[in-house]
Image 1: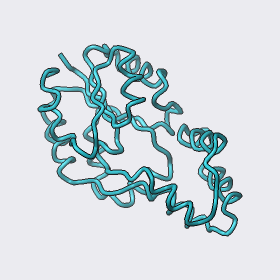
Image 2 (image 1 turned 90 degrees about the vertical axis):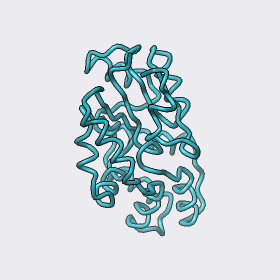
Image 3 (image 1 turned 135 degrees about the vertical axis):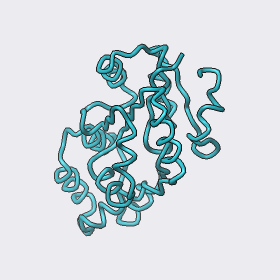
Image 4 (image 1 turned 90 degrees about the horizontal axis):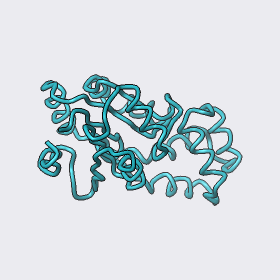
Length: 202
C-alpha cells in the first residue's frame, strides 16, 4: 500500500519547453554546449555556485548579451502551470491519506521566476508535507543519494512510496532502490489521472 507520494515539479505540475533555453541562447550567439557547461549548470542546480557566478560565466560566452537577456533565455524553459492541477493537488492534500513530498531539480533563477509568475505558488507549496529543491539541499536526481536522503529524512519505506517524474533516468534510479515509479509522459498523460493510471498501487 502506498503511503507516500513523491512528485517532480517540471512537466508534472508546471509545463516546460526543455529545448527553449538552447533556442534562446543560440539567438544570442554561437556557443558549444559541452561537458564544461553541463557541469556549470549542475553546480548551479545543486546550489554550489551563486546566481551571480553562474551569470558571469554565461556572460563570458555571450559578451554582447545583457544579464537580463541571459536570464530571459534561461527562464524560457518555464511555461504555464494549469490551475486544474493545483485543484487536484489541493483535494489530495485535504484528504490526508498520503504523505506528499515535492522533489525537484531546479535552481534559484527558475524558482524566482515561478514565484513571480505563478500567483498560487505558495498555495501549491503548502499542499506538501515536504518541499525539496535541488539547489537548496545540494543534491540532485538521478543520483541515489537524493532518494536516500528523502527516505531517511521521513523514515519511509521504498515499497510504500511512489515517485512520479517525467525523466526516465530519474525513475530508473528510484526504482533501483525499490521505490514504485511512474515515468509520466507530459505529452499524453496528466497528473490528475494518477489514480486511474496507477490504480493497481492504490
